[in-house]
Image (cartoon, rainbow, N blue to C red; front, side):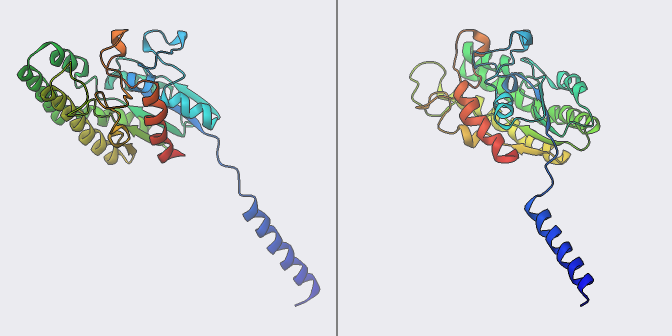
Length: 261
């Protein structure tokens, strides 16, 4: 090999080594969180005053992840009480530069609040009937509504990584609570959470999105367990049956990190 060719080969090889040792910087993360009260942080007791009735706060899992990961941009538009139609409206903040989106919705569409109210004040049969009504809605109506949400997200931010989060089971059955709802009611409510998991997980997969099933993460930390990550009936009443600070910090946040780092 002639000296000039040898030198050129050495330079080329050195450049390759340097490139491997110094990979291109990852693209900046532009993160938007969409969803309902579970995503906004209702139940943590700490809220941003500017969020009003949406009850968004710094102890919600999207804000916790953003505080640690320091994305280039972060915006949560999750709002207490949001249904699928509301999340479609929330998606207006998405752009083609948004490259990470989390979505959590479906519980309010399925009548979560009314289920809890019926089960609290009605008989075991009233509770079971209301949960079964909700499960019928989840099976027959919710899939199309979720398809609309996920399709809107994909259209607004076609290159984004989208992560859909599910809901935990509310109660440990049987549990340590010796007052409150019967085990029949608790089991019925949990079956509603399982129905949501089945549908939300399937529709997220069909859209090509990642899905996080948090039921395992919350096992042993439901209401009536030895270490609750969810509020039972509490004050303010709107915080009832939502993840508390530990639920976001030790339940949702590690689950989200397991998927997006």
